[in-house]
Image (cartoon, rainbow, N blue to C red; front, side, top):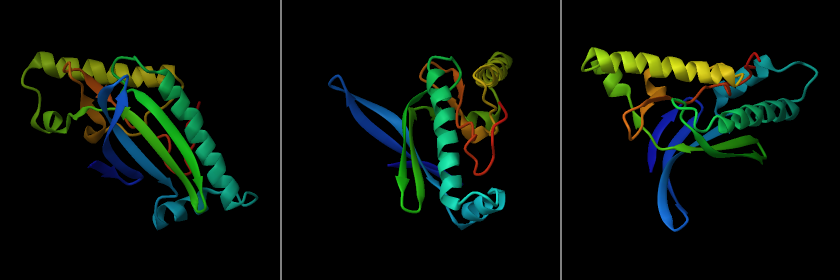
Length: 173
């Protein structure tokens, strides 16, 4: 079941069995390049001495490297944890499959405002902490916006989708 989409891909509700227990997660599918606009951006950013195939391979490798860092952050409080990922080479590029914990969007909370000062303060502290955790891992979160902030089963706020895989953009490390 499709539960979201964005400029780089789509997100689906996925279920799987783990030790005979049915579990749910979010599965994001990113195509590299995604569309004609993405391909044009790739071509604009590609050094002249590198083929398109080599350039896509370099970007896919960079995505894998950074996803490994996010995967190692599992249990870092206010960062949505990455359960697993896979990068598959296709004839016209790559497909990146990312499986994360299933969370509830905090967009309504953000748009309607906090019910009280304590919740607003907790929100600010937890999202700031998530940004700090990304930085400690050597990653710059480039996509802080309401649609990337979630609430877990315990009412804690989590930041997801660091967008370091924006086409042709390298993350300063």
